[in-house]
Length: 76
Image (cartoon, rainbow, N blue to C red; front, side, top):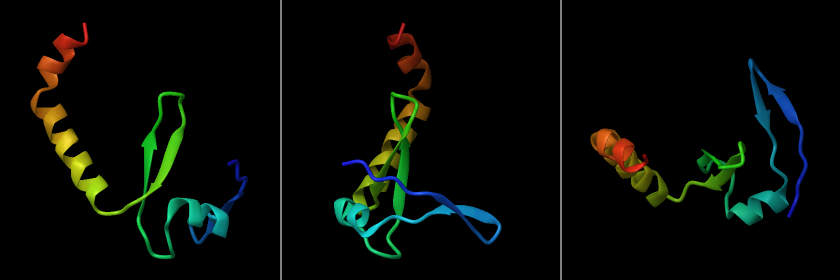
């Protein structure tokens, strides 16, 4: 599914308005949190926040910080 939308000025910020088809695909409604994550293709992925994702990402961030040196050595 490809959906085009424009960036719009909202006060002093820039925002994006998602059409109802995009909201249905995300299973999101007004007021829900969304998460942007970096992709391998120099892009961003958008996903609706359903609670558990943020908790899991916090654990991953903590592990990456704690084992930074070991992960760097393993990557070589």
